[in-house]
Amino acid sequence: MEDIFEKAANEKVMARFLLQIEKPYWSDNIYMELDMTNLRMFYERALKEYADICKYFLITDENREETLTVVK
Image (cartoon, rainbow, N blue to C red; front, side):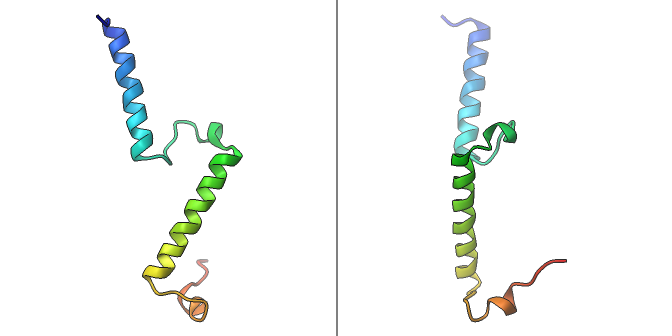
């Protein structure tokens, strides 16, 4: 039978695991996770989201200058 401390530790690990599934972009310490693999995944996800936004708002190469403006 598990003692109360072991049970609490297991629950904490499971909560952390579930959080990583639901919010893989969330981190306790983002500086510890700035490695090439995570940066590459972040970049690829950003490209995919940008492509999805372009599809949703019907942004093409022809109308890109009219629809996207620089925020100052």
